[in-house]
Amino acid sequence: MSLTILTTILGVALGTTCATIRQYGNSASQRVVTVYVELIRNTPFIVQLFFIFFGLPSIGMMLSPWEASVIALTINLGAYSTEIIRAGLSSISKGQMEAAKVLGLNFRQTLTRVVFTPAFEKIYPALTSQCIIVMLGSAVISQISVEDLTYAANLVQSRNFRAFESYLVTAFLYLGLSILLRFAFNLLGKRLFVYRATK
Image 1 (cartoon, rainbow, N blue to C red):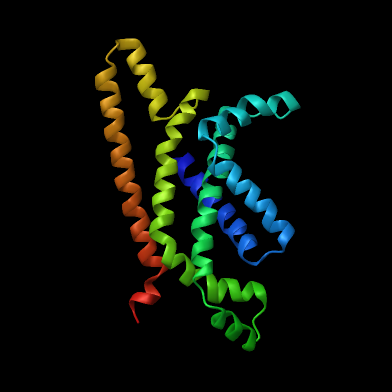
Image 2: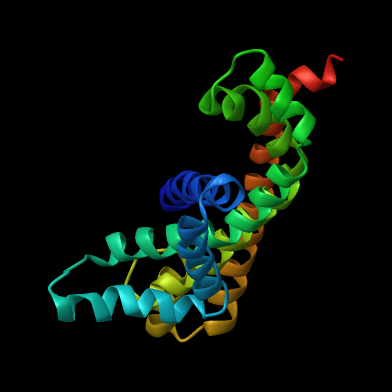
């Protein structure tokens, strides 16, 4: 769970940064972000994970299984959340941006006070769904010996040869985690966007 929380925070932060660049950055920075997004979205997560864990050591970058998992999950979520967040940013009318300039707000103030909150409110359900998908996809990290639920299931069934029961319990645990995360995201959303509900 700690890995999910950490990579969700880092991945959304990365996605927000990249989405902002794609929406408002110069052409060179936009191309760099586009290459990153397309590369990650069009390659399997397990290949990305293996490249980071097994490939990077060949150029001297030694990472522990946990560190490699954090980096891989963050990069993966960052790429998918970039497009989701960019859709939210695109939905903000130019009139609101111009009104912010008239009020004397600089670009950073315009983003934080005018753009981000309504944009995130619009894409919040899609963003939370993507975070949950990444959490479920994190089962792959057991392939590099990170001790998650899938790793525990593999260990149990290798000792007692009761694969059906082991993976059935694991499936229900992932289901429970998904429901719990969605409930937590819903509560967080109500707190973040409460100002809308009072209007």
